[in-house]
Amino acid sequence: MSPCWNKRESPDRAVVHMHPVSARFSDQLIAVLPRLRRFAAGLSRSATEADDLVQAACERALAREHQFQEGTRFDSWMFRIVQTIWIDQLRARDVRKEDGDIAEERLGTDEPVRRVEARLALAEARRAIALLPPDQRATLMLVTVEGLSYKQAADVAGVPVGTIMSRLARARIALQQLIDAGAGGRRSTKDAEA
Amino acid sequence: MQKHSDEALVAYLDGELDSGERADVETWLDAEPAARDRLLALAESATLLRGAFDEIVHEPVPERLIAAARGQTHGTADGFEAEIVPLRPRRGDVKLSLWRRWQPGFALAAGLAGLIIGGGLTYYGNGMLVPSSRPAGQVQTASINSWLDNAAGNYKLIVNAGGPPLVDIQANGDNGEALQKISQNLPQQVRLPDLKPWGLSFRGARFVVVEGKPAAQLVYNTDNKAIGPLALIIGSSKEPDISPTFDKRQDLNLLYWRHQGRASVLVGQTEIGWLWGIANDVAWQLDAI
Image 1 (cartoon, chains in turn brown, cyan):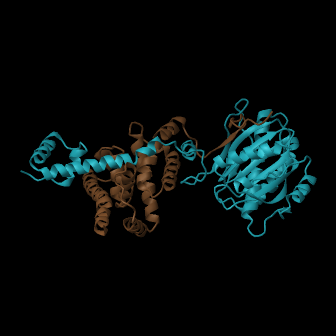
Image 2 (image 1 turned 45 degrees about the vertical axis):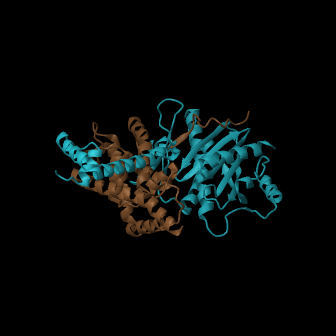
Image 3 (image 1 turned 120 degrees about the horizontal axis):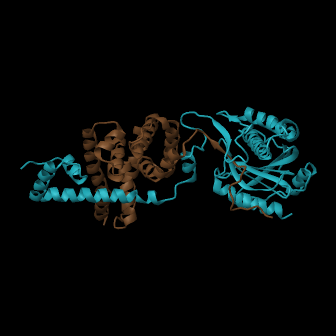
């Protein structure tokens, strides 16, 4: 009899548990993973970095399961953990320099102008958000992409609602300008060359 | 007429204004074409942004994140230690006796200790250290854990050694000669799996102990960090066959199986998908004898 390659479980299989995890808590966490990945993707510079961030958030959430208050929004609690870890990581790096480098590199590219193609437009939007300051990036992701209310976003970020409003307004205006500049600016250059 | 700020315009789009504020903004929009254009542009950029991140929520979630959500990953952010527990104990509620704690920073010394202690436990364990009254399922689970602990220790030993590889038989380009030397030390004939299609080159072999019997640890190298270095430990076994099963020890992935009196385990930091493919290839080559 050949080994059964489709059967990946065995009655004797041992797994490694880091914490005594309640199944219900894990299920909640798994259910929100796609949105956590999306939120993290808006914060991070790469898909791998985003998934690393989500993984770290899961581990921290499991370690602090007792701190979650039943009756409050689980997704908001997780967004807050993701954002906290991300901010810690930003502080640990020389963020100002790295973000500056990214911005310079991206703004200076001679990428062909094909804004009419939808996928490129979406990529343009992803690049544009990466150019925003971290606070604005996180606020934009929470409200505009994840659909949190200003109050919920304020709770996640730990700032007053007024701060969310002003960050969001600045972020939305900047985003629109970046998207327009991404297409229009290069188009102007190309027109001038022609 | 009051001119509104960008904040009010954005909040209007987000539905965050009360009815009075909303009416004010709408009056302004009716009177100011430029404000309407601005509102439209803001709405478009928001739609574009949502679309830009929409794909991600429809992608399959990586296995490692699901494992993390289940608390089955290593190296937590808060420094918890791993404990190995049975997923489905076979009998009763008697706790598994062989629990191991893996300390962070498991390195060469720990690898060496794992080799000696784990190997010794395996060598004597089945007959002497394990009480005969223990249910067979638990003995088997403990035996597998010991086997895997030992395999992980052996892997760490050889990978963390640095300098000249700690192998008993050095690869010298003539795999036939290496195979002959390996076979002389094993109770049954083995084949040296050719893993070149995976970019893995045979580096050498060490002799270890698995389930109380001599076994060979074959070491493969590659420049591809997603795959190697990789170790394949092949020994003989009188235990029942086991289908290929995945397990972890710290940052190591292990895939093990028993088939027709032969116990095999692949060990490495190899991504799981690669590990399954390589294991399939190895099993096919070993069974082709």
